[in-house]
Image 1: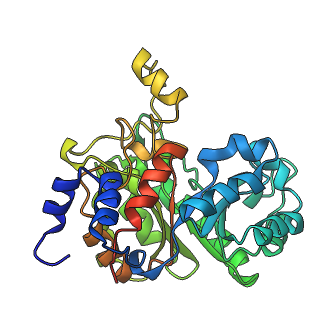
Image 2: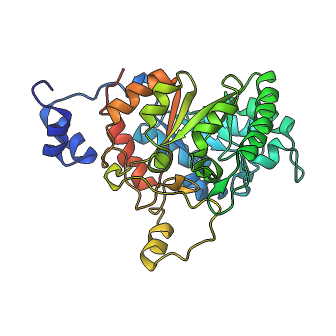
Length: 329
């Protein structure tokens, strides 16, 4: 596709979906996925199908659109209790040609609370064939959007110990950022960069939540400043022209507008479980303003090993189609 810039190409074709039609009509073949890594999907946005026992059907549909690997949530999530038998879950994955490389676990599982056990979680991870164990947040205390350095140190010390147990079992502990991680310290600093100082770089790797970039900052900056730390990512489209926003972590809940409530009911309102603090309506990857080739180029330095689209089904299809057009190495 020489002689045409990416911006010109997308301008002519109207985004990811139209880009595919343009390429097909022009006889242009799709190139390799970004960094040569399989396109992945988080399963949380599709929890209703899993809760109903239709993991196999979901995997079949994912495979059909080009998804090759997934990130699960553990049976510690109520909606994922149908996956409690790790060996049976692995069989369903194998039968559908799908690999689960990672899963999110709840903090009570890591803390051996509420009848859960870190050791049992590890056994389940091995049965399923995971390589990484993650969590949505390390759940530090936040009050009105603020936390303290002492709380950051406490939370990191606890999670480093969790990471050591996981590593001893032959697995890698990771974490991404929702709530606590998107808060600020009392002196005004973002909490997330400070967490990177106190989390052990070997015991705990990072999973960047793209929908949070308008709260915690540019992913390229993090990838380049912390080589090898960011081995995973959750993918959402982001309108970067809207500027930075303040996380509402720890703030009292605000009643949504009728429009926001309708969007949430359709799965359009937020990018992940907690939305990452990005705000606004969800966008497909490639139908936003992020320079994704630059992000993936930097992600190579950051150590990216897997990425997972985490969006509604409609947006997942669009995002996957766009990712197929990228040839970042």
